Image (tube, rainbow, N blue to C red; front, side, top):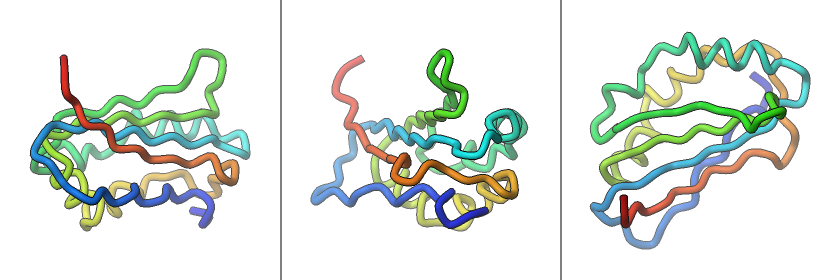
Length: 118
């Protein structure tokens, strides 16, 4: 995987709360490997599924923009997400990223959202 294919770490929050969070990650594929990336996510090892506090994952792209990939994960609390993000299974889960993948420089984002209503 190219260095520019790594998602940045989410910004640290000054206070962690025990409320549910949604983490949204976005990146744009630069070198036409859309289908390979979509397949890799469809065939993922589901390593995050057993992480403490993990509630769910959706992977999507905007209509007509298959190179723009959005990941939405739901967690019981922010600390559960951050523990997983720093852990071995997070890094292991990225082993299926297609070799040669390049991302549009500056396109990667991660944001953590507090959920306050359903």
